[in-house]
Length: 208
Image (cartoon, rainbow, N blue to C red; front, top):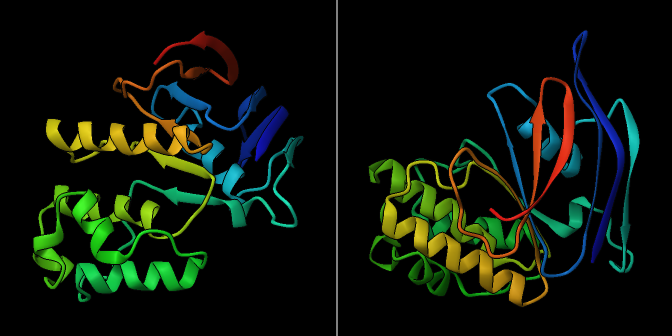
């Protein structure tokens, strides 16, 4: 899958959030999106996910067969989007069945994020960091080439951040694409970077 974004602009209410944003991503690429709070980082992910219409600009998807862009992506936001009354296993089983194209079995995904022991615990009993890791495990239970991650290290300790980095790099090695907003370094090798500042989005080059 290849993604080409050209001259994208975003309005929220009466305000122009950003304008002139362009980038192209190929299999194995990573894009890190930086900027102050309110600059439009999450809005960019919302546009890519189809939750928000751009003011203008074009998003072109190629080499994805008959799938639309929303059908090609995982989206992890600030909220973990988990049902507190359901167990970790039940939350991931629902995500796998809803998204389709299953990948890792649920228990294998929980093991990959170090939470196999919590499979049968209601999510309400788990810590913020554990809930975040379960949310990230959704990336593993269904195959989607594009990962949209909004502040993915939120609530994660150092060991869990290293785990996340490993998941992202393996996804890239398998031909996947990662787009992540962050205030902190993610450690992604040869990542492209975009900074959104004061209604101007500019490509800042390589490295993250």
